[in-house]
Length: 312
Ligand SMILES: C[S@@+](CC[C@H](N)C(=O)[O-])C[C@H]1O[C@@H](n2cnc3c(N)ncnc32)[C@H](O)[C@@H]1O
Image (tube, rainbow, N blue to C red; front, side, top):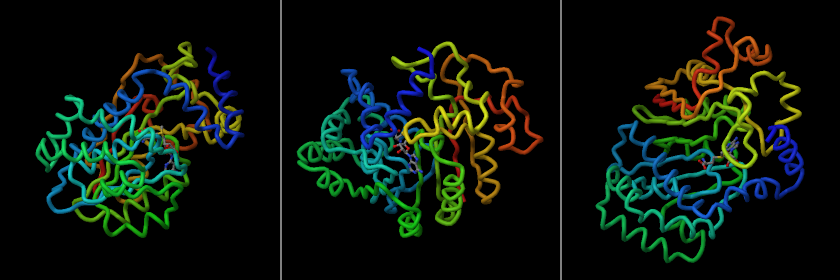
């Protein structure tokens, strides 16, 4: 389906208070949705954590940036051994019914094996914690049991009130939805908050989200199609609360690290789906204006997804 149809539908939905929730409904209709989310979140949470050398025996605090609709990654951080997890978002999308539908999948052999392999707890202890979690009857009870503080909507003032206790910051496919001015604040906060030898891991999806799989996917366009448009044109199609992506490549995030003197331990770029190349000459000058004029333009479409690993 032409991507403009999805874009217009999302734009219409964005005028409604429950537009984002409605936009999320089609994905949840898949009968294996909660199983896939639980497995994916567990896998990605542990993959990011394993890039770091954090001694959880010393009582550590994690900050998850951009909670979304699932609490699984916060719960997994708790099951790994973090003593406290702060998870923040601009909208409150976690519901107890979703937690209930997902938490028991942590007993799935694949998920459990992953958790056990990186946790300070033994398998039996983890199973016991999941058993207690499954008996919880409210979201507050789940949050208390797992030492999770869920702040949505949050402000940077909230984050600074925790800054001296944060040992690990992580996000999963969130930064591409964040406006450049807020990214700047986040990287400044990271510099201010990160103690010596501590870590920050962001996985960022760089592609045009109108090429994401699903009923409305447009298979005819490049996964970097959005780079062809002027800022004002793109703002018309996708400058709303549901569809917004910042169209920034990994180079922009590396520049932010340089600006705030953050040590990039690694950047792992990936291409996870078939590429439909976008000719570099089609990239709009508004996009190029976001970068240093000396960049190699091919770099703007080099990776579909990447993981940025930072220490102070
Ligand atoms: C694609 S979802 C990812 C959610 C979750 N991390 C996951 O993997 O399912 C992007 C999330 O980023 C959140 N978000 C957007 N702008 C944000 C901001 N400035 N600060 C924190 N979260 C933000 C959105 O509300 C949304 O929940």
